[in-house]
Image (tube, rainbow, N blue to C red; front, side, top):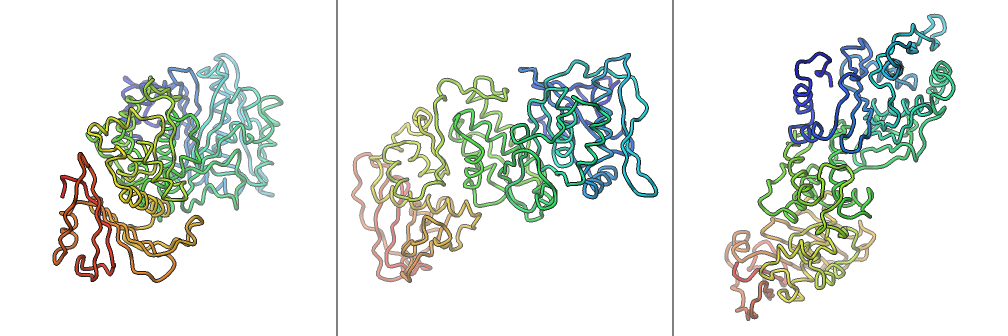
Length: 542
C-alpha cells in the first residue's frame, strides 16, 4: 500500500484508490468493507530505502482474524537485487532484515527498546555475519497482537515462510499461505541459525513450517521458474491450483489467476461442503477448451443457472490480455448475494433453499451412456446435456425447475436417440475441454485411458454453438454425423443441394424431435462423406 501514509487527510479514500488500481472497483470495495487495514503498521519501500520490503496488517471485521501480508517482487531495482541475493545465498537477506526489524519495532510497546539486527559481509572471506544493530524505541502499533495468519506471493512467500520460522514460537501463527513461492536452499540454514541466535530461545520455531502449518499453492499449468523444486526446497504442503496457462511463461507466476480460482472454489465449497481443491482443478480444466476462458466460462455457467440469463457476461481474457477483473468479481459477488446468508463471509453458509447440494464433475465420467441414463432421472443432468455444462448439481431440483417452467427438461420430451447422442456430444466435448483442443480438429480416443479401444469415426456438431468434434477412432469407417440445431442452422452451414427431411410425426407436447436422414451420396451436406446423418432439432424452431 505504497500510497497510504500516516498523516493523509483521508487515508480511507486513499486506500480505496490504491486498492482499485490493483484489484478493480468491485474487489477493492469488498476488501475495504470487510477488512480493516492497520494504517500505522504499513511499511513500504519509501520507508526502507534500498531493500524494497513491503508489508501490511489486515483484520477481518466480522471474525477479528488478523493477517500479515508480505508483498512479492515489484520489479523495482531493490526487489530485483533481493531476488538475486535469494538465488545466490538461499535467503532474501536485505528484506529478511527489514522484516525482522519492522516486526520487532511494531510489537514492542512505546517506551521500550526493540531489538534490531543487520548483516555484514567480510571483505576478505565474503562471509556473511549477522549481528545486533542499535536498538530503537518500539512503535507499539502491533503491541499485544497474538493470533495471526501470514501470507505472501513469490518473494513474499519466501518471506512468509521465514516469518513463521522466526516468530512462530512467541506469536501464535494460525496458518501460513503462500502462492508461487520462492523456496530455500541448503545455504539458507546458516542464515537462519545466526538470526535465531540473536533473537533468543522461544521466539521462533527453530525450523520451517511443516505441511500442517503452511499451504504452498502453485500454478498447475505452464512454466513457472520461481516456484520450482529442482533448485529450491519448497516449504509446507504443495498444492497445485488451476491457472489459465500462458505460453509466455511469466504470467503463469502471477497471483491473480490463483486467487480467482480460489474465489470460485470457495463459493462452490459453500454449496457443497465435500468440494475440494482437486475437484476444483478438474472442474476448471473442463470448463473450456480455450486456455484463457476457463474461469470466466465457469462463472457464467453458474450465473445463468442461479441468477438467470440477464447477468452480464464475464469478458474473456487473462492477466496477459488485460481481462476486466472488475466484472469478474462483480458477477461473483452477485452470485454470492443470491446464494449465501452473509455473502461477505469467508466461510460461506448457504441460504436454506440452497443447502444440501452436491456438485458432480461430469468430466470424471468414463462412459457417455452413464450420462444419458442419469439425464433420464435427474433434472440437473438433463440441464447439463442441453447446455453442454461440465457439472450437474444433485439435490437442487428447485434451482433447475426455474429453467423448466414449460416442461422442456422433462425426460419424456426427448427421444432415446436424442438423449444418447446428446450425451455423446457432451462426453467428447469435455475431453476437448480438458485437453484444450480446438473444436473442429481431430481427437484420438487412444489418448485417453477410458476410450483407448474406441471403435469407429464420429463427427458431432452443435450448429447453434458452432461446435464440431471429430472423433478419430479405430478402423477406417466413414464418419457418422450427429448434428444438433434447427434446420435454418443446417442450411446456413451447408446450402443446397439438400434432401428435404421426411415428414415428422410429432407427439403431443413434444419439445424435441429427432429424425434420421438416410443418405446414399454426399449431396445432402456437401463436405460430408457420411452414409447417414442423425439430425436433431427442437419443435417450433425448424
